[in-house]
Length: 169
Image 1 (cartoon, rainbow, N blue to C red):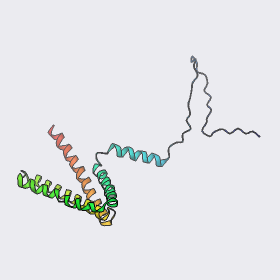
Image 2 (spheres, one colour; image 1 turned 90 degrees about the horizontal axis):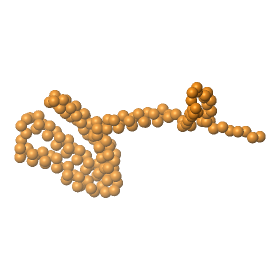
Image 3 (cartoon, helix red, strand yellow; image 1 turned 45 degrees about the horizontal axis):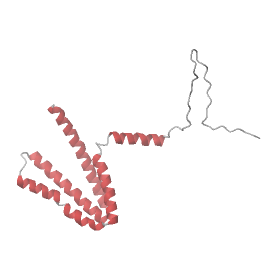
Image 4 (cartoon, rainbow, N blue to C red; image 1 turned 135 degrees about the vertical axis):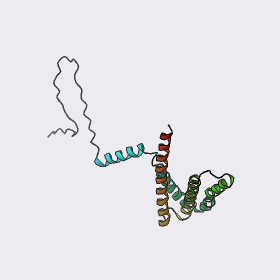
């Protein structure tokens, strides 16, 4: 019994001869399956993330920092002492700039103070995460709050900057 098994994807198409054409029509039918709903959703999410990659820069940086602190914690948790000393640098730089030259507006003073406080909090989180592991519940919550604050500040700053540039033209 010789049964001939044809592949499922192979198709035979009969195309009638065209008038006035000497060469035959060639039609290629691929055997690739159609993409699944999951792969289409993943592709759409990836394209969206790539298109808006600048808008989500703080979140990407925070995620990379979370992974890096986990690796450093596993390899050498005593590095936290170095990060603890460096955590005081932003507040010190802000204090030094206030002594040397005061900004002209109250808004600039407030913005610089908030930026120094935020950077000091991030550096302190880095030192604590290396010492105690970034997956500790309190540290993970702090990471989430700091990432959210950075992302909101990034969105607001980009929007204000783009409006200011448009108005000045």
